[in-house]
Image (cartoon, rainbow, N blue to C red):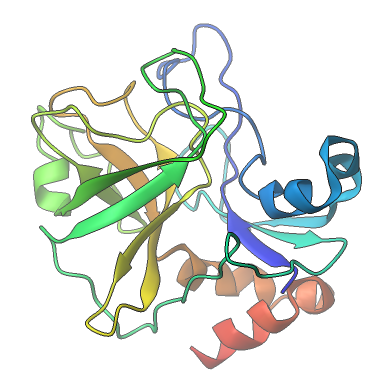
Length: 225
């Protein structure tokens, strides 16, 4: 495979309303596999094409997703794995646990690690997440909240674009969401916000004629779903 899903949002400007949201470090998650294979000097040539969702409008968070076509195939190893994309009919019940991974900050605006981190969070229903004391109606049908209302565990700056995954009964891991935004990190009543089942909302862009080649197998998969 040489197609990857990720996020669109980028570093926030000073004075922006959510200046401490986790939108930082660009495409680090999207080129990670290529980076590991080529080394730092090779990453500049890793990305061939970036296709953004046609309904995304900066600086909004809705439709926060992109498809990245790499310049070479990703070789899957014991350390580099693919994740399953859910079928349109597949649902993930709230209150189940899911896993996030990334090289983002260990604390809000804090240092970043050299070793990939992981954390377990709980899916939170949108009605709860839209309560006034949480995100006050900002959560759209394209978004999913995950974390803990008491705070303490969360994605953070630099984790954007990373996967939120959960296993099924056969221990097959599925992509539930993609790290998108949040209010700082691990604050009470401010869980992480993810692009929900991101791949399903990308079919609009992949089906555009001039994007068929770049989308490749991803386009075919989404048209079939």
